[in-house]
Length: 477
Image (cartoon, rainbow, N blue to C red):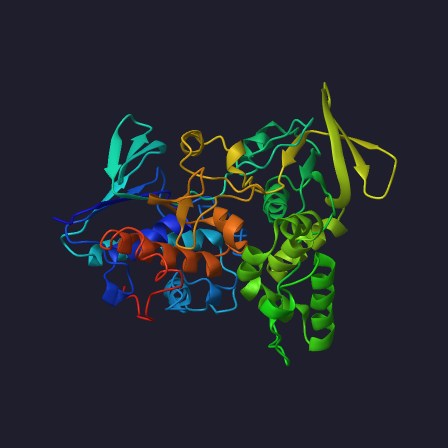
């Protein structure tokens, strides 16, 4: 009998979409599991929400227009059609509430469950996985409630950690999404320091402005740059071969070529950036280690603020807060914090200055973004994998090392026959692995590789599955 058990750990975007793929038959665009198989989704919360799409205020908006947010690349209008069933006025260019997207994924999973074959058993386990032990061709997953699950394949769909990276010498709240710290702010004109000026800072700042409109906020980062706003992306009059032109030479040369293309295009810079983004995974994998390090040191911030943009309406709200002196954005380096009776004294050096500035604040919150380095993870499951040598954290601290089909590489660099990964920590391998347009393709490919490995002799399907496999079939819901 070929019945197998597949366990998915994590029910955010990647875990939920992988479950939909594995529940669906090949004629519906899915990755068919062997007859009699069992699919287990291990997630304590509601499937589909994760960190990004859980319930929240209406002003927390998706940073990608609805028309590009379908969870299924072969059905590009799926999310727009779902959203129009909720609100007929929705347009493809709208930036919808993030909580809607959690509802969308949850409903699509339920639809896939109802349509799945009767012989395929689907089970939800609402707790956390705490450990994994691999023996031969299977894994034993330890759960927080003391139970265990035996599985033939495990797909780790662990998303970003909610906590930001450490700040040496600084006492700060490291989980910006746990906003209990706001309850301890003084009743009159609280002062808050936000360490970071990216997307997380914008979310937290909007929350502060709604709940404490009298607050004064200082946000600092090394460059003091805010994410750019979305605008209409023009088609390039003259397309260029980014993969060829930007593949060789020092980073300074590649940057010069990129700027020349922006100047020569005669169009908005966003169109050139989009073309580079399409080829970036190939460029990233081919780049020598020194080039990757140089990019992270000198260009990562510039890439992020231009690549990960915000809706124009959100940008204008932040601009208005700055105009009203509710928010100050500065470039600088935070040196230290010191708790005193009246609050916290923060010492920081503005960029380009030798003078140290001191400010008295009521709270310091690290909003520099999720910490992608597995070695610093507080997750017991992650530490279990590292201690056993079942995984190989990327040397640049960007996530996990995997092969092109999502199989985790062990400490010796060998791909696992049991453990797979799909999620934003694929950034180590592909760089572009944090937004839905990229993640949905990674999930599609990894789910196909995982399903195929259960019916194909080990290793024989690797090369065949190194590129997206699914035919462009409509997922029927």
